[in-house]
Length: 345
Ligand SMILES: NC(=O)c1ccc[n+]([C@@H]2O[C@H](COP(=O)([O-])OP(=O)(O)OC[C@H]3O[C@@H](n4cnc5c(N)ncnc54)[C@H](OP(=O)(O)O)[C@@H]3O)[C@@H](O)[C@H]2O)c1
Image (cartoon, rainbow, N blue to C red):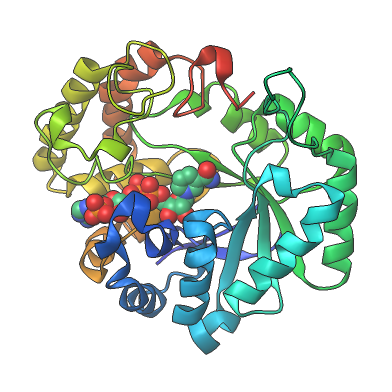
């Protein structure tokens, strides 16, 4: 396993991180996702993964609880990251949210406490147009985060899904060490603005959904082969269940791109999932790819990406294959919402 430094934090993290969403959200991933969760965490530890990441929202706290239990005393030798929702970043709630996460994780400190989404999302309005939520405020949130850091409850602050403007707003008041972004070889919109802005603030980059929730790992022939919850991103047509971006989608181009990627992976003799993870890790500024795994077998299959370098010629070829889809999907880095309602700016 290779290691890279996260932003300016000095924290050395493994290039593959363990995403614990699967561990606690059976509504999304299926109840079987939890069966081998503890064993999968154990294998991740044994194989040198040092960054473990979750969120208060995953399974309404179940992911944090199961991850904490699975790590047990090994918690002390890993970097533990969780995320807080923006609506919990108002003064009355932030401390309580942090303390609740600490309790569920069974620890007295969080290494990286991340703001799950930027604050400038549109407020939820009631029928009379009044905001139902008190808007979080960057200055107030940063002040409380600093206090929590002073008390040793959190070591570093991280961001998640922040675009260039969001980062500027944040850094006007506070600091952070990382930005977590949805990034994979068929979702490259972050390359236009988000990644350059993240790099210019010298933040580490944690790439989530590096396999597009597994769609780059398992062969599928038609969109109907894909579980409903995982065909809601901007790649898929608005006619599909649960899709909310209001756009036509890019299904034909996605299938064509994935087919060409698969042919290339066979030609170079590297499994498709491994190749796609290596591609993410070769992108400038990326610190670690957060991989989700339901069972040890999947994790073990993907581990080779933690040491393999595909080399510049293969990376250039992969850029070429995925380039037309990148161009077609444009600059909107929100994987689920359309241009007009994008939450990342
Ligand atoms: N900040 C955010 O807003 C945000 C958003 C999403 C995710 N995240 C974080 O990022 C983590 C990773 O995202 P993700 O879970 O979508 O990552 P991913 O690595 O793109 O997808 C994980 C899924 O891919 C499948 N898979 C992985 N390796 C495989 C293999 N070798 N063979 C076959 N299938 C394989 C499994 O699906 P099956 O379950 O079908 O087997 C697994 O559950 C999450 O756990 C979460 O911590 C953050």
